[in-house]
Structures are given as structure tokens and as C-alpha cells.
Image (tube, rainbow, N blue to C red):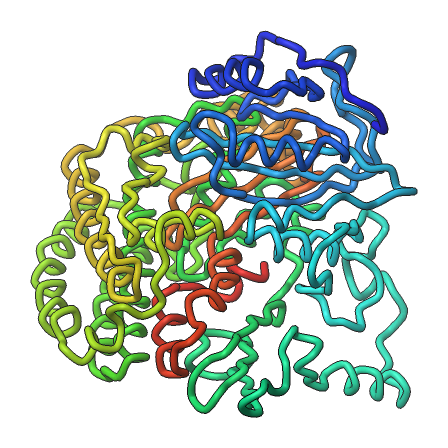
Length: 601
């Protein structure tokens, strides 16, 4: 695709009313009709443009279209070179060796869209969009690091996930996936020297000056192993005394190649890997993955399974928020609350273990439903917890929220407004703490959330204190949702009878050879998912989490992109901390509520 793409093609794609309204506005307001509408993209409008048209289109979508797309939600890529199923006839996607995918979100339209550009292997470059969205910086670095696609005009195009000495780009199809596929590791003296040299800290490499006209700066490494950075995370600080002149987050120490692993696992055997992304979110990590596959395969999930999923997700929302609440209080000087809150978390895990057999990582959701039905006595345990927890939350309100020391340490610290949150890709409690009442469970209900009564907590300070208060209020709302699940749990199957569910329900396996064969194949090789592309976002514990899945019509994923909330949140640290003190940075890091597995994947 080197020239102008053909004018938009209207198709019979069953878009939502929001999507249809957007396409009408785009056709009417955008004068350069140099895009192609991908007709087989049912989950969201997908537009293809060439590299020369990318900046004008994205600028128009962010600034000029009515009800604009304020957020760059995600930026990723696909190595297309081994892909077979890319549509047929007029629906066939443009030829490309690599494809860049820009995913945008309009809050006013309540709509996600994709912009794609096709790149030949001989010319893997595209213009940087860091001048349009601030948060594009890290996303473009990630794509360059893992795919080798260059972004012209990027201010600091360096590796972000892999070590600076790494050879190759891991998410390319020709890059090895396992250590057993390459020569055994050896560390020569020369290699050790290069590795040690790469570890040297040079402020200039980070965009920092060693001094100004008045004073010399001090540089401090916070992390990558430090209790205040909540994981393997490093922040390089440029200090004038104790005042932060600049701060540069450094990530990638926890990168495990979760997206690469998806290419080698059967659809259902990848479920346990999702638990380890936001490792405090438990089954909430399973949900966007199985929802995406169910949308791809057209699987209808029974009502009972949907309500069970909602109940378990809200249990893990409370569990995650309890960890945040306790460690936030601890980071600003309160030692006691975290011990009380972990006791409550253990009580909650007792219920999770009784229902799923696991605790932190039960990997319990399945394609088409859940692993098994609720055990006898589940309702008694849930009711006891619902009766127990409100008094504990009221105690914590007096112990933590009303504590004057905590308020002085967190009020007016790490402030950003709604526009800045959208610019940097902030979602979830961090966005709602700026006053925007936006929650996917209300705006784009999934798994039956539209059947539940609950409120969306918001505050308008946009500081550390309000980010804490939003999460506390969300625990109260989760208790409301769980009680409704308890009192209105429907009867019926806990899993769909669709042939692509995993594992399929046994049914007549002992009486019918075809059913037995299907059960065996789905349990061993896994189901064969239809070819296609789908992305399903959910309101996870820390913000919006989604799985963008591309199937080539086989038993494994061709490409799995995991969009996590913590990745863009950490990128905002320099804006939030500049001019403050080191002690304020600790409160800011605590208020973000991230885990590094969610960042690095």
C-alpha cells in the first residue's frame, strides 16, 4: 500500500449505533476520503490508511471531528508474514508483511476504533505520533523493541522491554520462543564486559543534564529492587536537593514474553497464563480473554455462568483493592492497616478456594463458562462475608481515610486533570478520581453487568488521596454487586453446550463416539477457532484491560495483544512528580496501584 487507498467501502457489517454514527460523521466531516473500511471487522470500525495519511487522519480524529477520540488506547503490531487467512474477495485485507494497529477511544461517543497501516518488510517505518498523543512514546518504543518497526521523529527510540544488548525483535515470527531453540548460553569475558558497560548510568542517555547555571544535580536510582516501587521497577531521579527536577521510569525487568507464549499454547491452555498478568486480579484476567474468544466463535454463555463470573470478579476487585489500601497507608507511614486488611483478604480467599480450588491464581474461567458449578454451601460463606465486611470498611475509614497525617501526605500530591488523564491513557480509578464518571461495566456492559444496580464512585481532586477514596468506595459497590449475585443466582448450566467450549461438557461421551472424539480432541489439541480478529476490553481492578486476538483458523493464536492499564499509568510519573519531593513520589507510586507483571507482561 504505497499509494492512496480506495475510498471507503460500505458493507453489511452489523456495527453498533455508535459505530454507524461515527462512520457517517467521518464520511461527512473528513475531506480526505483516503481510507478503506475493513468490512469483516465486526467488533469495532477498522480503517486502513497509508503512512502518508496517518498523521492527518489521527490529528483529525483527536482534534477536529465532532465528539473526538481523546485517548490513544493502544498501539501494537502484527507480523503478517506467516498468516494465511486475511479475508477473500473485496473483504481481503491489504497485502502487508507487518501491520501497525492504532486503537483509539472516544469517551463522548463510547466507541473504540482501529486504524491500521500496512508495511512491507523492506521499509519498516512509520511517522511517530508522539506529537499527537503523549502516551505514544512508550507504545512506539515497545513496537520498535519487539517488532523492529522504526518510528521517524520519535524523541528517544530505545529498547523498553528487552535489555539494550538484546539481539533481534522477539515478537517477529522468525525469532526463537524458547532457549532450547538456540545455542546454549555462555558468558565470555567480552560479553560480560559489554553487559557491564550497558548497565552504567549516564544521565545524558536519559535526557538529563548534570547541572544548570545555579547548581549541580544529584542523581538517584529508586529501584529496581526497593519496597517503595512495588515490584521490579526503577525510577531514575534528577534531584536538586530533595526536589525532583525530573524522573524517568525504567521498566522491562519483569518481562516474560506473555504475548509470545500465546502463540505456542492451545486456546484453553493459555488461560492460566492470563492469571499472571495482573497477579492480584485473579480470574478477572481470564475474563477479557474468554470473552474475546466467545465473541470470535459466537458462543452464547448461559446466564448462570455470567452471574458466577461477575461474582468472582467482584471478589477479586475487593481483594486487589485491599492490597492497594493497606500498602498505600503503609507507604505514607501507617504500619498497622495492612495487617488488618490482609486478614480480610485471607477470609475472601477462603471463599475463592472453596469455589474454585485455587486462591490467587485459580485460572477458573473457561471458554463458554466456568470450570465447574458452585459447590454446596457457597451461599452461606458468601453471606457471612457480606455481613462481616461492612464493619471492617467503616473501621478502615476512621483508621486511614480520616487520618490527618495520611491526608497531609496525599492531598494535592500527584495531581492531574481529566484532559491530562485522557492524553496519557489513564483509565479506571485513576480517571474517575478526576471527576469523570466512566466505567465500562456501565457504559459498555458485559457478562450481564447491565442487570446489576451499583454506582460509579468519582472525586474531582485528581490527587493521591482521591485515587485512594475511589478504590475504597468501589469496594462498597462490589459488595452490593456480590449480594445481588447471592440473592438472584439463576439456575441452569454453568457452561455453554457449544462445541468449541473448553473442555466441552461430557454429555453423552460414553454413548456417542462422535461426542467422545470431540471431547478428546478439545481437551488435547484444543478447539479450532474461526479465523478473524477481535478485541474485548473490560473494567479490571486497575483500569481497562483487553485482549486483542487474531486467529488464523487453527488451534493456537496467531497474535495475542494484551493491553494492560498499568503500562500507560507508569509513563505519567514524570508529569505527576516534577517539582515535588522524594517522599511525595513514594505516595504517587503507591496511589497508581500497579503490578509490574501487568506492565511488562
